[in-house]
Length: 226
Image 1 (cartoon, rainbow, N blue to C red):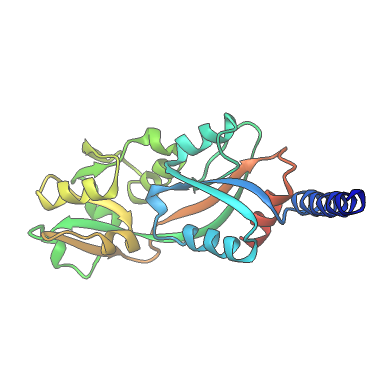
Image 2: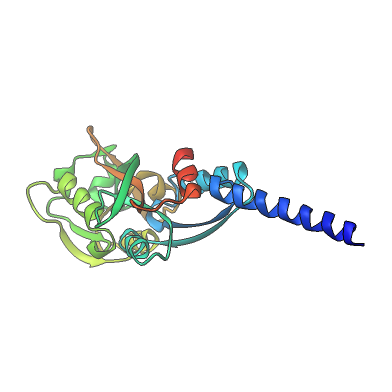
């Protein structure tokens, strides 16, 4: 009996040792990932699914927010890595730029510019504009304004927090908007026309952020896979 118990104890010790090694190498453990809603179509979820496929023993817990909220979650140690709209900065944060996506003008179908194949940014100078609140992502917001309204401020008549709400307001004829080209086309509503800008088209960035002093090997594996 003692021999059998000894063998079982050795087996459990071996299993525990392997689990510790796996956690130490990043092959197991837990990783908290925060997506950003405005970049839902830029492939962040696919990247994480590929990580899950390669490292099935890592428990990945996901949430969805917006850039400012995700940065706050990193600072509060409520998430380990976050997808953000670049540029973004924060004390103790490391940020890696991943991609740029073309922006597009979103117009009511009856708008005179809807007849154009492409839109020049200066044609939106005096238009009523529907935009999302700057507080959700100051760097992202300012980058759009600097590219589309470089010499003036947009005439913002309404702020909505999500693309769907912005598109609904455009469909109602309340103004024009500027959104990611891919997302605007995907969720386009009746009464809305999406037009690309003339070259060079304005763009929006996607990045990933994490605490610069985080020693997690699991985090390091995710960053390497990106």
